[in-house]
Length: 472
Picture 1 (cartoon, helix red, strand yellow):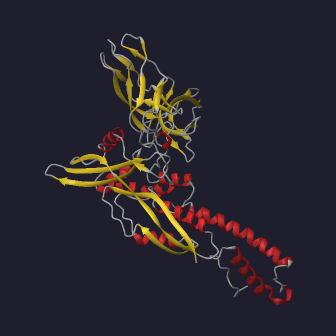
Picture 2 (cartoon, rainbow, N blue to C red; picture 1 turned 45 degrees about the horizontal axis):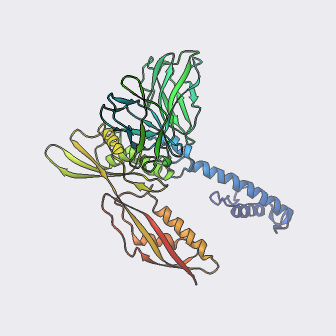
Picture 3 (cartoon, helix red, strand yellow; picture 1 turned 180 degrees about the horizontal axis):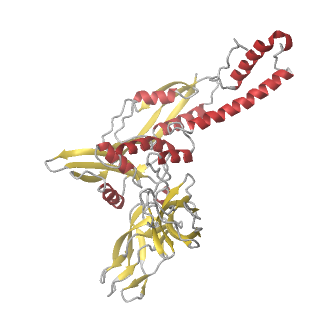
């Protein structure tokens, strides 16, 4: 067998496998036993059937290899699993936040109180919950209270069997947050890790998978307490989230709960949102995860550089884009101005954040900032770019189909998930995107006609797309 030509293991397509097999057959058997490789030959039929199976198996092997690396992985759950290794938690769907006005028909002599976590509804039945008590003081007609989209549930997820490392799935999908568990009358807290917990710590960890199902895990009696055998496990958690929660003003109008005055009497109140709700977002896209997971790992859980502030802000629920600028330096502190944007009401859009979301972000960042840093949160700027021009369509291609491909290619090119604030738009890149579409013979842009350099707090988004095509 010495001297035989080796298979080309990098040639993995069907035709290459057939050719390699024919070469090997000729070397082993010569022309005496098998010399007919025409396509209508039965032997050739079996050969091509083998090549088909081999090609299919090699395809799956390639896919398996790709799924082992973050840059090439395509399956969301595999990407989530890899992010666990570096401490990055891809954002699940996020709930929107909004300020709610609670009002009366007439003034009362006593304070009127709407409890925290009162359930509100939009015209379309989308649920919001108040975050704090709304107290309309005596003699006043209204008060504002913050509300967040989503519904809080408390459900039994199972019964402890007294074993180590117990795990339970929550009954509902669409989970956005796990709040706490109740076991044998005790409240158990959710923590990020069980590794540093004591043997009597009443804690658990939770994970949300690619399908927005949540699973909770308990300890082994050494790192985290084991739930007592036979005890029912009740979990409080929230479901909801998504861009659907970014509702328009005056759409939250129904209240399920009852307001009472300080004497316990029922009082009729009205609710509405005078502003847009903002911050609601669908689960983080795969492209965004691949971009931000390595950046988050670089921060090592602290904000030192401008890039650290941008990474932490972008990883905060509800924030889509962030740009940090050292506005001025003084003898006592660095003033860092952080420009932010949140998710829009439609997919692949951004908008300015409401004050509630910006206040929450500031509170979050203050936990990780340097002692000598002073933070200011401001709105970023959004500028849409219109694209127009003419194309020459290659012979044999349908002009309408080519134009549709141009619109999709520009939408991918201007995708806000991968475009940063302050990132320039190079005219050469636009030509490259359109020229790379099959069927485009030639393109001439009428807008934009030159590269665009935005301000550091400005993001360029896709505006209208208007091209017309002519045949060669």
